[in-house]
Image (cartoon, rainbow, N blue to C red; front, top):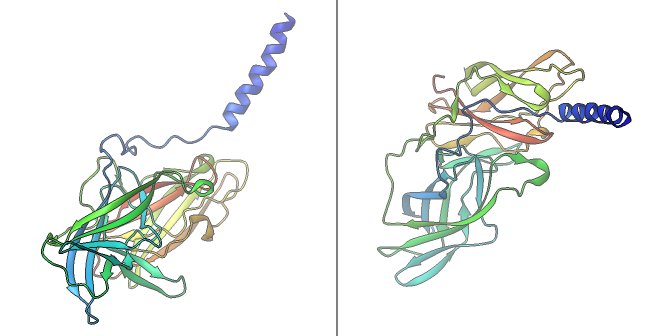
Length: 305
């Protein structure tokens, strides 16, 4: 009897601890990894030209074939290598990557917003090789590093993979459709999706407006807990028909987000500067979920705007 009395309080304590550590399970249909196999990142050549200085200029589009949301960039300090006419040439000018953003699987892109937060500018993806004119059959190799899956602020190196983009300059892709090149079942979500966030909070996209400068998004967070919370989503970027990710990248919790009172809701707006001619857009949304400063990604369909 004494043993039983001792065990009951312990079981109650364990049950309380399990309940306190409970995290959100994502809605069914958001697991895209089971339907496609990772092939890493790939790229296609979209143009080959000479600069006014006589350098070889190669325009590129990169494709996320990792089966996960993924950020990639060329290896810093590592030149691309052009093999032409039996010789290798180092190419020191490289702008290849996602600009810090995680891109959805099955999406392709050709640029992002670079520059600075104060003075952002479009950065197209390309490689330049000084003083080189390629021979027939020339090939280009670009080493890259990628980080795939959910973004954990405290372990940003998780999901790291390295690879090499291998390109034949004789094969130039034309008439590409952006941003989706390979549809992934269950990936694209509708704007009315209720998104489960940290501590059972729920994020909703209440409204999408096309403005003269781009888009304005109105968000709402509902907080069912007994304490006030901030749920970070940053300033979500947009990608559309021109294959450029619009939105200067910074980690989501560095963007000001209002406090949601206990048992209440709060609303706020974010914007994305997108040219009027860009259509078929998607929001690349990252929501703080499961743990503090851990972000789950969603592709929100706003192609009707």
